[in-house]
Length: 275
Image 1 (cartoon, rainbow, N blue to C red):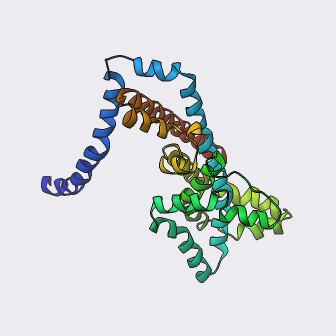
Image 2 (tube, rainbow, N blue to C red):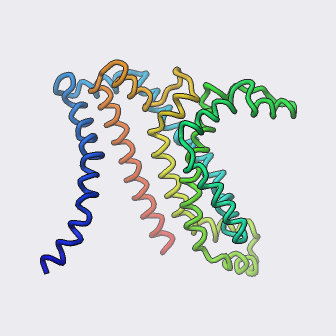
Image 3 (cartoon, helix red, strand yellow):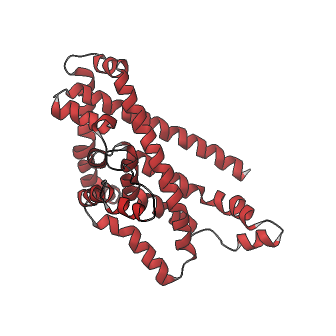
């Protein structure tokens, strides 16, 4: 019996070792630096919360992540719904379009947006052809949101499609046959059943957007830097490992708090729906 139970444990041992080396050790190093560098205490956290600029950067980071999540949801929901009603060939094409970004380097995609969003780029030329623009898209928060939405949309589409594909579409005709308006039937019958996919996609996109560095650095302005850029500046430019660690700890703590709050909210919502 001991040999049988020891076998599965040994199979996951390499994964646990890799997790400890590449995740837990850097995380612990960051925590230690935040409380000990350059001297033990809470000085790094006092500096972070005492500087108004840091609070502005933190608020800008969360607001950018919020807008990225909102825009990604608005674009991904109808796209994922179209995947569920399309035929096999059309669904394969739509799925391929979602997966193509995973096959392209993040740097390549971001530099492509640098070319597209510049003042003389394709987007501004197209807008000028229809009498609009030109708009300042590069080095702005708008450009950052556009680039991050394109990069993170697959993480919104795939959870939505996974949930929507399991929803019985016969419920919509049943609701309309009972007198419900098609829009009302969709909002009250279909949308609530897709909420698990919405929450999973939003959580994934939001958390990923909080830690983005390359896209904001290339598409954004130094005056509108996000917290990931500030951490890089503190650690790599100023060699302030303690301050960088404190910023990372604050971001990690706020992220975990939001995940816990979302979990409690979803649990209560699920109980109400079940009831």
